Length: 109
Image (cartoon, rainbow, N blue to C red; front, side, top):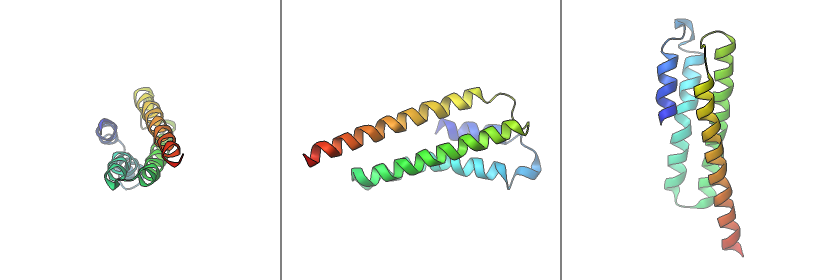
């Protein structure tokens, strides 16, 4: 959720011509991350949760690419703080995926 707020904050200063382009894409990707995690957790089953976590991780990768593009285009000066958040979230989602997959192997045994 903090990443979403940060993306909304920084994209507020992008050029107006990007409002329906890069700004919209970055905001959608950022919102998709916690939304998919939340929906997956609410489904009740590990397999479905895993699928939604994979989608959230894909949105995170998409956001990372858009962040790098924004930086290359000069719309953002220092992306290191946001990049650190993305890296941390990627690790957290990866750890949760591993945990759920291991738990699934234990149930099958």
